[in-house]
Image (cartoon, rainbow over all chains, first blue to last red; front, side, top):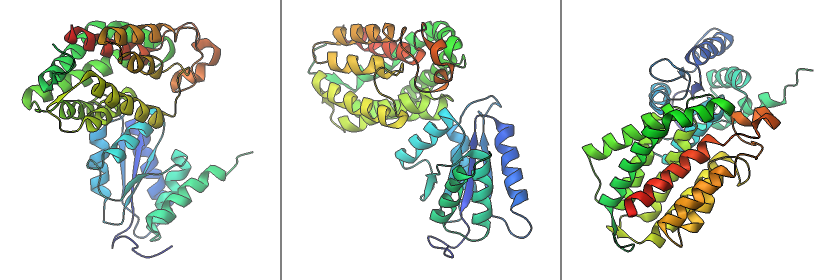
Length: 140
Length: 202
């Protein structure tokens, strides 16, 4: 865990869900569980611009720019088109801020881990690793 | 239209024909998608290709590759379902492979589309036989070596061949055996894309 490896600010987190309310609620929960003090910037990009279920490259791009503080942006996505859209945007190279990447993690658990570690000042690699480790937490 | 003289205007006509075809068949695509998907494929493709045409009307590129790259970018931005990034990647990668040549041959187009299809397979992690758009795209690109007409026929046959397949990717894969007996909506729209290509080349 290094301080400001790629930039000065904290790593930003973007949560991409097929549903606007799911993305917004998970963002709220993750920020809440990150506890008091300064938390890393989190933005939700859920559903389509007209409020329907789906994925919007426009909303994802706007969310990533909003949380970008120069230290990279960790993007977590829920299913199918959310994952594919982020992957296609990363491949495109100019729709997302430099240093934005898709993090392979379970959506809710990974979001909490990502926001907690980013708020503690971890760099993008450490945030991504913490979010991915959430796959290992078995529930029975 | 000679095979060796495919210019940007030809590619614009292809995208316009594809948009018209998607518009015409939107109801059928959504019906197929309601059987094994989330019943939005027709609307999504309609919205995406309408945006493609609008962007090309506003600013038509002068190179075939740039037409496809522009179309792919629009699809990724506007479709809202998995078909957006998949078709977007297909067209964008194909366009980038064609580069900035002012005219391309059918064989060059085939090489470009093959690169696009490979990128789609990589993005979605699917292979032929998984009941996806690849089941129409892969045979179509192979048959494009012979003619545009052969490519359209191969795509149509490939789409029909998805009926008895078990879905292994996307939402349909959750249905397991129940996905058998339905034609894949993505393979169906891929066949429309190649039918539109044959139409403008005729």
